Amino acid sequence: MITMNDIVLEGHPTLREVAKEVPLPASEEDKQTLTEMLQYLKNSQDDEMAAQYDLRPGVGLAAPQLGIKKRMLAVHFEDFNGKSYSHGLFNPRIVSHSVELGYLSSGEGCLSVEREVPGYVPRYARITVKATDLNGEEVKLRLKGFAAIVFQHEIDHLNGVMFYDHINHDNPFSEPENAKPVDR
Image (cartoon, rainbow, N blue to C red; front, top):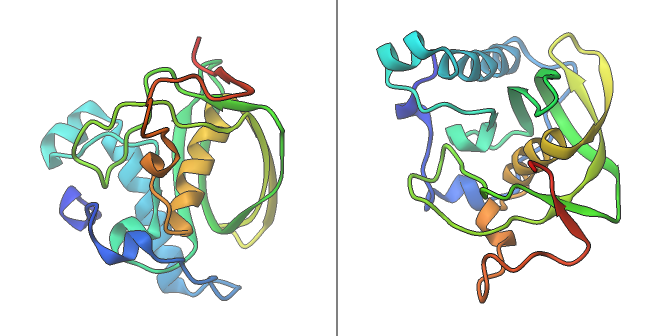
């Protein structure tokens, strides 16, 4: 079982490296790791489990956050319209995106960052992601709003990018051009 002790924190070199493609079909070990990543997110959102195991709640987790340099990510959340997303994905990639941008008015957080980093994080408002799921099936996901933001945050981890790299450092709360908040 993955716990907070397994999650590496900012400053760890793996968080700044580009992760390697996972050879497919995925090995049993990689499937097991990805399954455990997804289970961490589910456990972290269960109040009893989170308290028992001292888990910080999360909606996404990428393998580099565990010190694993592989293109694997897990997401488990409900968007603002009540739509559920629960995926373990190998080699996810953004194949198309909108010109329009979106951001969370409250900013973003990260399981690998134990401090508040205020500011708007501009991201594409809509994206299409292709990946391979835990069953070895090719999936294509059309995402918008909060879901698009979560997936971009996790895919950034696979490319050695942290969410705060996107914040305007001179004026963290200046509204990004061509962007709308997705949570209002």
